[in-house]
Length: 318
Figure 1 (cartoon, helix red, strand yellow):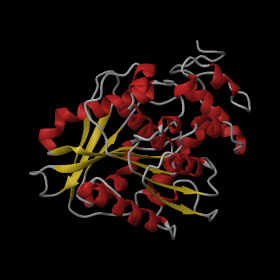
Figure 2 (cartoon, rainbow, N blue to C red):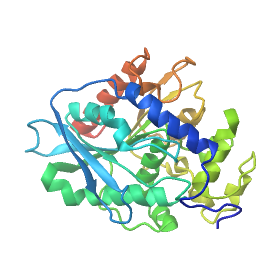
Figure 3 (cartoon, rainbow, N blue to C red):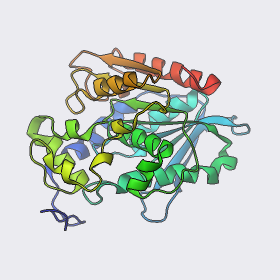
């Protein structure tokens, strides 16, 4: 029992679960339209025995698995409720085509699991990487953490946890076994107070927030301020002068994460962190528009992401 909610396997699905479940089913073919040749993969490596979902996939260029390569870890979006590495195969192949070892990591989902379970899972997956470093020739000194939508939240959160002891202590995380040099957020979520307090069709934002945090929220999300980890809910708050060079994109008309990219840019500017960003002002190029090949500016995001990743792999700078 958490607040006024009971969570478990027999809980009736809420409208956010239904929406994001439909998104996963209906949009996956279009989000995986792009094809990349000569990419190999090893799938469903269990990184933690706590749950059967805690698996990762590894993608790399054929014939390249004999020398150290830069690494990008990717967390798929899904509104904290859905999503899977299985729905981002094209994205992982794209990263592998750039010479990276691309690793897609799954985490447990809400409402069955609530904050900070997802973050613990993602962080545990990162700390598992040294165990497969020799097998896949991972150069963990050139590690980028990335994600889209809610996956952007987890990516940014994990960067903060790797860089800051206070974040780890607040969530109960061990010392990091890896240290990222960069972060990529595709239409990501970074400030949960603004995210879950936004006015979205069918009140999806608030319902999603209730599922993720396991508490009842009013339209102002005032309940978040009363949580015992209130200062550690939004990864945007972890960005300081020690943050890593960052690439991100956003849609100005985003139905789900409106304003999140602009908030991220403001924070990065405040601390003088090098960054590159791409954005779209078209309503038709909406949330996660970079995943859809039919969107005119999706290719711009991929090209700009590729430029960022090449620069980071070569010099660690942008």
